[in-house]
Image: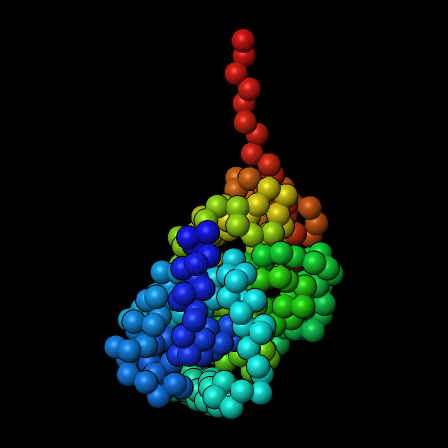
Length: 312
């Protein structure tokens, strides 16, 4: 009962309700929230501290910034938000300011990518059949998922197409520019049950067995150590959870290793099955999608961990 009372007390204040309403629609850092609400950083930091301590918000460090969002298990926060009037003038003004901020952030991220010549839409750059790949991915995964993790989420496209199937979804990426684009995409489409955060795929800041499915789309060919990346992905999967990998099949395009900084010239089934087996997963299916470069889709299942029974 103490936890419930702490959450009710923390939420019973106008500014904190506004913060909850905003963070229920996406992730924001303190400077974002200061700009939207028109309040000082020290004042908002105190409110945010109370909300985090009560478990109504969670902090997501990202470089010099900290983003705030609803935790996956913030049931009371979501019940409170469901009772807030959508037509409240103050909340509506906050939503408009947040939409403007998301658009500016996406434009700034896109400009940064253009200035540095980064080719962030790899499927387009390689002329891969994106529609066919997405269709195959949807066919491989169940119609309903509780928690999904997308490793190397990039601009958030995979989170967007899988959002209708998920109760909650998280994307992780090492690039802040990618995360800015992904946050803008999710906010524009109202996908408040999807979020992104900065993370290293070799050291995910996530608990064991926390997800029903993990996806890695066009990620492993950049990895220095694909086996380690798959082992970490398997760690956060629940027993019998699904690991879906979409990547290039073996190819002879040496230019991709230089111009696109690929570390691996595609993967074959034996290679992938070996890495998956070492990670405690069993390969269930594999299929190809034809195009200028053949793309391979591997679906694996996390094997239950057997506990030896001591002999008498």
